[in-house]
Amino acid sequence: MCPQFYGFSFTMTTSGLFKSEQALLDWFNNGPDGPERSAVRLEGIVKGGSVRRFYRLCDPAGESLGVLMEYSRGKEENNYYVAIASFLADLDVPVPQVLYHDPDLGLAWLQDFGKQDLFFFKGSDWGKLKDYYTQVLQSICPLWRNGVNHLESFADLPMMKGFDSQLYTWERNYFFDQCVSRFSDVDSDVDRRALHEECSPLQEVLLQEPASLVHRDFQSHNIMMRKDGPGFIDFQGMRQGSWFYDLASLIYDPYMDLSESQRSSLVETTHQMMDWKLGMDAFEELLDAAAIQRLMQALGAYGYLGESLGKREFLDYIPVARRTLLPIAERRGLECLKRLLADVSISI
Image (cartoon, rainbow, N blue to C red; front, side, top):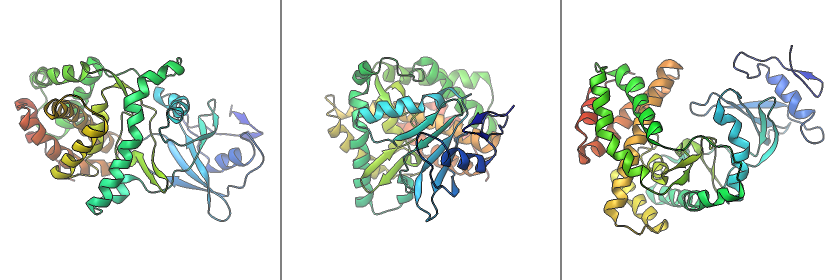
């Protein structure tokens, strides 16, 4: 039997998502938390590898009334979006306001942060682009600096399990299974064990740092550039971990493919902004450790999204991520990782 809401019937797919866009318009126009509204059209927003669906709600003049998020409650972190949004807003981290939420139907009406993400400005003059990156860093720093302490005011905040040795091991297995095994001739338990043995000391470097809160997927498609400054989306995977993981996600983002000199400039900016007390060598060691983990995770994701989910555009970023990770593995003396990356070959 189809669920009922404000007199309207919804047909569900096996994944728990609604099939009918008209039903979504009816839901928005005739119910949630207020008078009738006048959305006449849904404009699909296709971003990244999310299994959620997003629509821009357009009025008769074509103006946005906000964004409608439709999500499957079967994925754990999707259920945490609204609570985490409230937490981040209270921390003065810029995220979309949740205007209405129906957890039973897996629907949320969100503030519209516009159409231009950081990726939109790829290739811009570096002076302009660095200013944007500086704004982004300034906006995320409250999460890195104060997030854990702020949890005292949100004692029951639901979050995913924090980074630990198990999660770092999972990321390496994800890389091995979804990238190495798919796109090279390597697929042995000996190589897998060698990768874990070689990279385990790096995860210990990260785990020894005091825990912060991290966005978890802090890359250019999840950073919206508005007239009044950056805003962040896709934060439902927030958890405790090293903020260097977020920093690595930002400056080693394969989508943006920054140059080494550009990355070095952002490292210096962040070093000063975070008032890092130890020397630059320690800073760079932590950043390299985080970048190695993050880029392995990204390579696994690109392989999974491209091959298992049929989103072939993600395969384009495997050569970029591989090229970005290789010199980090080189300077940290990770011979097994270098060999595995050298064997990865993909034809688009």
